[in-house]
Image 1 (cartoon, rainbow, N blue to C red):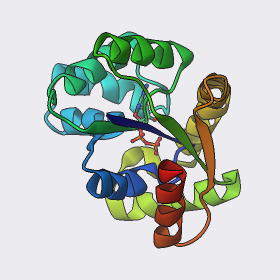
Image 2: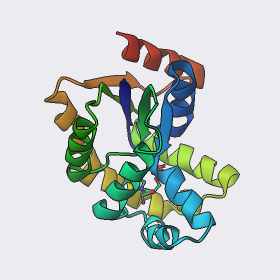
Image 3: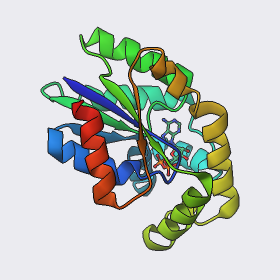
Image 4: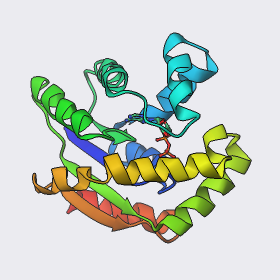
Length: 189
Ligand code: ADP
């Protein structure tokens, strides 16, 4: 199995690139943000809970997020592998993912980090907010909080995967196609 964690701050381009990687390698794309938004649209119990955090730019609690992710993974027992987008975001999530995949006799193959500087992130998110209507992309304070949460709780995961020799960094500045090709080489090498 090929299991990729696509990593990077909000606005790094994870969702766009994950869709391409999914098609190229025939993987299942699991975006925790997309799953939360789907549930928010349907006003499920999970959606209402997630909304109370997402609207503030906070993380949804680990317990809820981990349970949801695991229930998604087991829907695809025949898959070639997964591209995880937006998960893990905390050390506890990363440890749980390792244990969970181990119980399925598989593991994370690589973590690919998309590097994009903060000033570029804020511009991209505000632009996306205009097109997508995502409320969390339209408010500068919420964006700033998401970047802070990333720096405080998520960025450290690069070290977690570096210690396992699984971290590869990719320059996230350039055209969408250029970045896709950098990602393919990072996966293939
Ligand atoms: P972005 O990468 O632009 O922040 P996402 O779609 O990945 O967008 O996530 C949107 C929001 O969903 C996050 O700000 C957070 O509140 C919540 N979320 C997504 N993934 C997780 C996760 N793994 N753990 C906790 N909260 C999450």
